[in-house]
Length: 161
Image 1 (cartoon, rainbow, N blue to C red):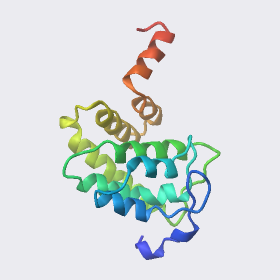
Image 2: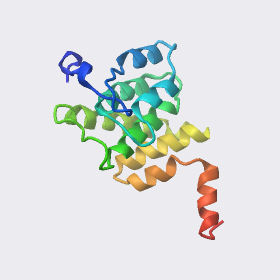
Image 3: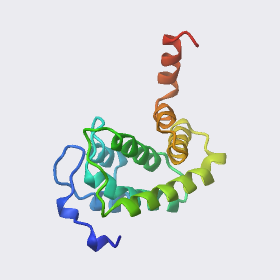
């Protein structure tokens, strides 16, 4: 969908307040923005809004174009998609479904491309999460987004570690 057809002034953040993610995303693309700030707006304690979904195509473009892979776009997109499945969050708007799905195809392809060289824990976990979502395994994606320490603690609780 062309950018000028998106009702940016009507979109909501994870806080359920009006939010246009484009300035924050443009700042990140320019090397001056903060993924942490954007993450906080688009994903707040499991809550997402329509701005979260509208940001995913831009996030996919940033991940695909990055000269050096970074984990944040993959983690943010995977977190948004995980939250999308919760009843308390809105559905992806009908006018965005095709672009959202196309963005996920791009994210999956980018994650698959960089997987062989991914070694840093956050990058590897985030790439795994995107691949798991792309393969229809949202629970595996949720597990991938946990830290190695959190996964170890879970295994200890059930007597597997």
